[in-house]
Image (cartoon, rainbow, N blue to C red; front, side):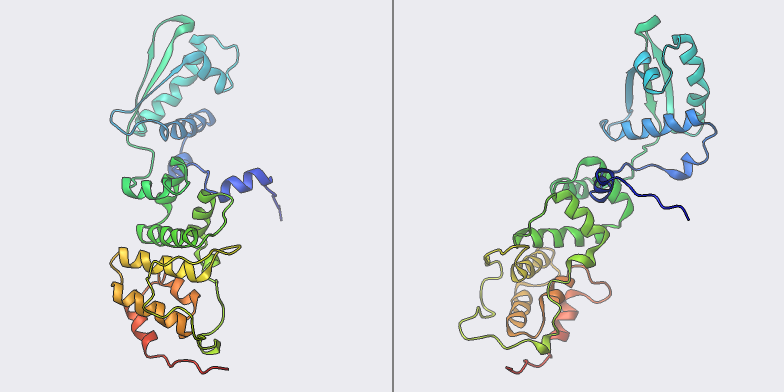
Length: 288
């Protein structure tokens, strides 16, 4: 068995979503190493270019040749070396054209892209991720890997954790990790509701403002995180204000725990309102 250990900087970059989308079904079918190298570089470059059609990329031939490992090649030899790769990428529809502009050492190579190499992504979804610390490239990559419902659930949970004072070394890394492993952030409280004590006099009643803030503690405040989830569910019209208030009341009474409330934003099958209806028939726990 061969075991590979990635360096810490590389592993951290992968965890935080700093990867580039690449169509492996196309990549594996390319005939030569030069074609695959050109396809990979042009795919990565495409992500930083404007989305308006037609999409062009202009690069000096000499600099491009050096980047591709053709050091000290004459320009005529560079062109001959690139011609088969250009033709293959044009035939596949990845490129529409590869045209040379100018003469001699000052020549430039203008690529015109064919179909988009980036996964189709709703601009609003892109804004949801880039507005929470993700760079454009990683955001597009994740949107190509996960359905819209899972993206929205991850954003909801991320916002709840941030509202509760969760300390993240990298917000983009946190959002990426929530999307990939949401279960890691849902085990805020593990106690069963029936094992919790009833609320003491003076604790916040169910009628407290849903959006009331609580003092963050190291690692985040569980009650504040639960409030954040409820606020988001009301905003998404998955719960009414009254249903959210009722849920908060069940939480303060000990009839549900924070983990269950957090799961409302990511649970599949039953709706948030259906789960609330089940919770409402639970008995009030006895004071121990």
